[in-house]
Length: 310
Image 1 (cartoon, rainbow, N blue to C red):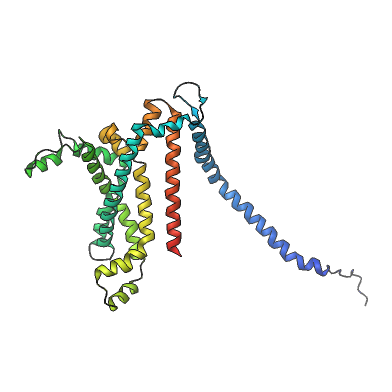
Image 2: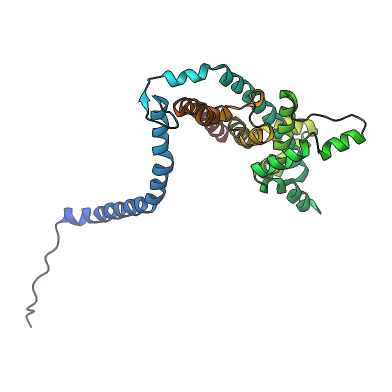
């Protein structure tokens, strides 16, 4: 019996060979389009909330831009604010505050992390108590410590008088304000940095400590030869967070001292240029310079983490 169905025509060998590749290419394009679709809302947010304001900030820094009134181009004249004596004083105070805060906060947080890194009976309660201040907002913390440091009605001064040391003007001078603010920031952020450092400590393989003990290393040698080298990326992370936060300090000094000249930070100087001197161009110039410094610090941090991660 003869079949009446038409004969099958096979595709050329070259076409059969290219078909899987075309399917993979089409699948890759579909996935790329889907990824772009998913990332579009976040990209729009970054564009509206970061890129456009940043471009506007740089544009403002090259203009005379009063708070009220029309703007006018002035070249780099706004950047003369970087040579202003008040700004230089603010830079010096900010650097002192950053150095002291980074050292004190780092040591206290590291000590707390060593204290609570191992699971023992009751250690969860200590972790909670140490971390609780991190849940308080910085402005609320500043108001709380303002009442604590107030000379007229300070419970801290009552305790100092009970010790027979006399009343202390905690916010009266540059040095006392610096010490008081560092103590407040340490109380506020030590638990947060403790959590980061504790995570880094717990990620170290216990077998390394056991091997070091077998080799005869004491606690100090284990700390310097094992713990600190392996913890360097975590320490670098906490350091850059502390340095960045200290360079951008505003709330604590604005609330504790009203931003007076001897305790003004760089951000307070930006606020003063923008809203007291009503010169948004000079404020933008200082902001751009601060942003450049922060970018350099963060790039150095990323390079350090990548080098240590190899």
